[in-house]
Length: 330
Image (cartoon, rainbow, N blue to C red; front, top):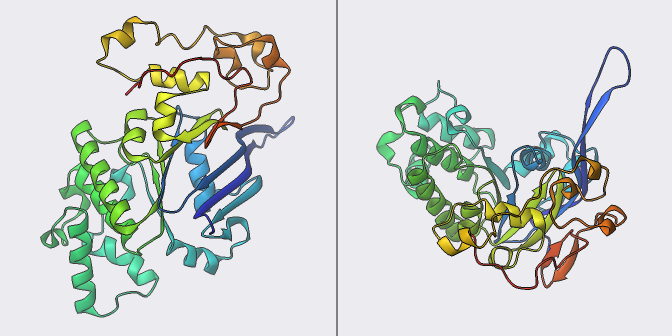
C-alpha cells in the first residue's frame, strides 16, 4: 500500500545572491526522510527555525526541493505539471498557523468555502451546494446562519474553524497542519485540537501536524519526529517517545515542558543541556555543541538515524545514554 506522504533524502538550500563575492548559501533541510502512514497523525516537533515549515512548503509545492524525493498520494511533487498540482489539491490541503491572515477579509464565509468548489467545478447545483455548506460548517462547530458574515466578525478560534472547513471542502485524504493552534488562547487550543481529532477519526485523514509544543503533539499524534537544525534526530510512536526518549535533544525538550510533578523538578531531570561548546561546532552531530553527553567518539561518528528499538529510531551514537526509562514529561 502506498503511503500518503513519503519523503526520502530531502535537502533544501536557500541561496542569497550578492553583487560582489560568492553567493551565500544556507542549508535548511539536510537529508530528511519521513513517511506518513495512512490514517495516522505524524507530529513534527522542534524549536523555531529548525526547518519544520520549510518542509511543509516543499511538500505543498510552494518551495522546490534542492534534491531528494517528495511524494504525496504516490505522485512525485517535483514532476507535477500545473494541472497535476490542481488534481493534487483535491487530495492534500493545508491549515496554516495564523487564521487572521489565512482568510480574505473581503470575502464572507459563503464565498470562502465556495471558492475551492468553484475552482474544481464541484457542487454546481445551488440547492446541493447550500446543503453541503451547511453540513460543512456544522462539522466544525459553526452554524449555517454565519455564512454571510465576514472574518472580522469572528473570534480567533472561529476563524480557525473556518480555515479547517475550507480545507475539508474538497474532502482531502491528507491534511498538512502547520502549527494550527499556536496563535490561539489555551482554552481555544483545546477546542481546536478536539475538533481535529474528531475530524481525523470521522474522515480517516492522514495528517502531518507541525508544532513546537510537546503536550499538543502527545494529545493528537500517533508518531512523532523530532527535528533539530534541519535534521531528524529521533522518530518513534508518541507514547514511546515520551516514556523512553533516546536523543539528548528530545530529553532537553521534554525537560522544558512545565510539570506539576515536584519529584521530577527535584531530581535534576531538567538539566538536559550543557553549556555551549563552540569547539564542537564542526562535529557530525548538530546538537553536539549543546549536549552534556557528548564524547570523543561523537567527533568521529557520521550522523545517522538508525532504529534502536522497534519503530524507534535515534541519531545519537552514544545511545542509549540512559539505562532506565524516564518519567513522562507531560
